[in-house]
Length: 440
Picture 1 (tube, one colour):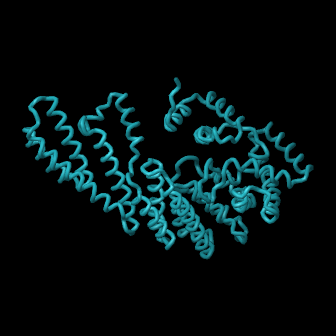
Picture 2 (cartoon, helix red, strand yellow):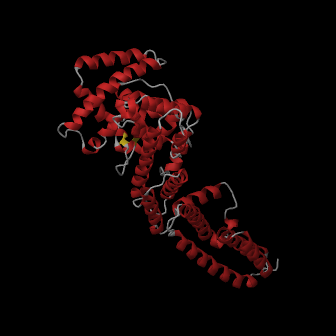
Picture 3 (cartoon, helix red, strand yellow):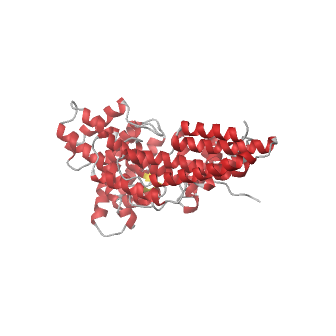
């Protein structure tokens, strides 16, 4: 019988494959196309593929999509300025239909030549310029013409067309930012951004917002760009800098607003929902620190806080059980942290307290009403009731090693929670009282 595995276990197994095995598996999945039943696996595979950066054949579709590949996602539940990855094929089909056979033939011939010289990056950019320019014109005609494209794709044709119109700048910025979790632009990244901004011909068409939207997607702290622009009074005129600051603030707010609107749809208590809320609160904090907060940021903050307040539990019991089982299999003394009879409950409580404190502190820093304060007070009352009950029972603990060990483990589990809620002084007082009642 073949058992099912969690997403985390699947990811671990796929990432553990040797590079040649991994690439062989990826090519097998890629042949299946964009079928929905393989998208979860493809999503995991692409994350490792990004790190490996293997040499891949240059196709018309692949080169066409380079300017907006930073906005491609496997799943979009709302209109957050993102593009479904499976839209690449329809976009390429739309462009091909608009181009002349002679132009397409010329592009394909040059692609074949470049595939024989994969190191020719300059040649790829030169061909890219022509394809992106022709594609932008073709897609503008599609936007203005009859509704022949799917509705979800038509909503994103503006983003796609805008990225194509400044395709070289988009590709340059994307390649100038290291892959992975990047907090802010380094010195070379800042120089590149300024150079690209100065090359936008005064940005009459508003193209800067596409560069800013890409930074919002790629940087962990996109608000850092606001500080960079505010200080850079040598390379860009003051009016231009102020306009760019408004643009990136708007892009960050739009991104947060769209993600915050989806937060309520997340599975209550799931680790992903808590992580998403924490990341959004961090971004709001970064905007506040930059000194350019607005009513829109306050509104998003209140929405996130209210959403967290409506979630019954901020812990994922399934995740806790899975983690506990993994630790038990490794013979770690998990049970001793809270006592055999209370291990599950204590473990869940500790995780809930940690989430309430961590997320609550972030909400407090934003200066808005914090619904998690009431949650924290309820947890404190719950722990106090458990403390009173435990202290009442400790003197009756049998004087045998096993019973004493279980009681002491239960005591120290509660001591840990008191420490989290009320600090080390209150925890130490409880520990001493418990040890005295146990005769320690």
